[in-house]
Length: 497
Image (cartoon, rainbow, N blue to C red; front, side):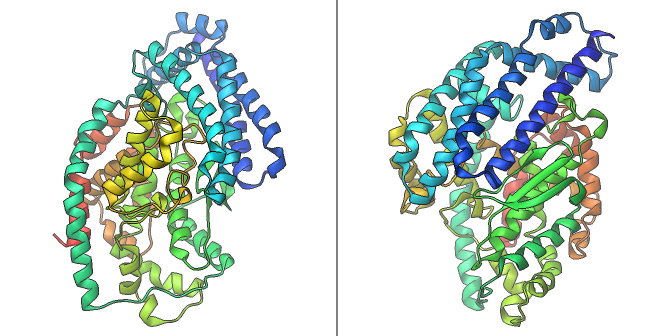
């Protein structure tokens, strides 16, 4: 057997271990009893250690030295990703990988209680361990890749992404969004003064919300023979190859939170379910990175399912499944006024598309400061509240709705947050390009996602990681990643210009 085929086998074994880790992670968030967290930390650390040893073994290095490909785009991309993974693995010792994994599991368990009690100090020692180990890992990996520590963290979530790419895009948003938000809020207030629609009145029983969510998932194209829907404290998409699991969280007084949480996570799941089966288990066959992943969730949630065309289709569906018949509250116009409502809210995952980038910018600035050592963890709540006030003009009443609201930092996901805004920009650019080829509005008005899936499958899903983020964006849209499409669509939807 030639070296390339042997490497394929080794990386298939690594993928199997990763899938096992994914199911354990899902179970940890959805079903695991509280008392099992310590043992689960040990088990998950052991799995990560096995993956690391497999990658960093002398056998892997020897195969990479003599490997040859057939010269195809896919094999060349696969080999390049194998070499990158090997370089990253060789940069850190196995014990550090295991220590960080175990620390993240323990920190995440502590976060659940701390968030519920709005008690940052209870989380602080656990998260400090995660931060210290993350900085150590980032330093080592950065040196191996020739990157700064923060760029090394970015690279693990979006290979090739750098701060020098992010900086001008975020600067454009920081310049354009505050005055645009003021315009949108003024325009929204004038429209509401002309005719105010009352919000739908609950309670909305959770079983009815779940049935509605499953119906929309089916219409979007989710394959329930290869996935499932559950409940967790923080919505996510996880699981394993061929077994994609998403979660949401329900409130009986607000069905839209869970509805759009389901739509968002289904966007992630469709990407995973649409990846080429022939390349399952290989680096080139996996999802490209979190910028692309978030673009797939946000194109479904923000660009498609918050559109007027889709809400006019979905309004009767919502009222029927939730057994509500109040025409004033459940008309398409009334629901649209709720779905497209812009406000300076506190919670990132519930934010509208106009204010969402500000939520990400706060976290991006703070996590870069923490990784650089410029912000002590004990000062994070105060720094979060102050920066949020500056960008959003809103006071943060407690840590639960401040720095404790997200799972990312307790779980060691430093470098992830920028991908949300980069994904939003990408989603807007994809939607604009798609509208030049197909009648998106007509499809959404009929609840028909097939042509939308076909476009995404052809331009994004089928390519997996065989090309880079910027290449896929440029090939699909004819332009590099930018802010123009996002800002234009915001003005069209919320200002009518």
